[in-house]
Image 1 (spheres, rainbow, N blue to C red):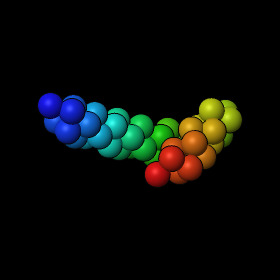
Image 2 (cartoon, rainbow, N blue to C red; image 1 turned 180 degrees about the horizontal axis):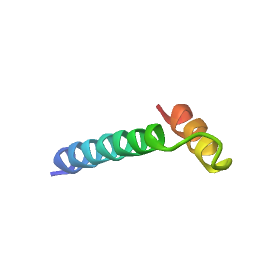
Image 3 (tube, one colour; image 1 turned 90 degrees about the vertical axis):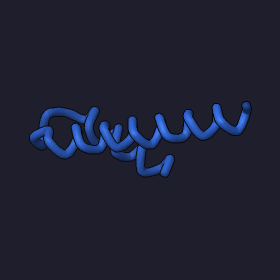
Image 4 (cartoon, one colour; image 1 turned 90 degrees about the horizontal axis):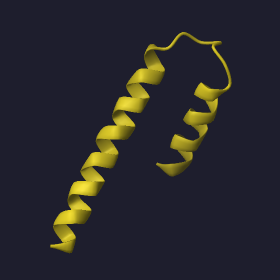
Length: 46
């Protein structure tokens, strides 16, 4: 049961990061510092 939970959580995390990456790609540059902060934290995690 634990392995199944870990697998589901891992899949949800990868999907969430892909969605965040796609949303950031569509945003125009120069809005603020939040987009660059998100990029640095995500790149550090992966």
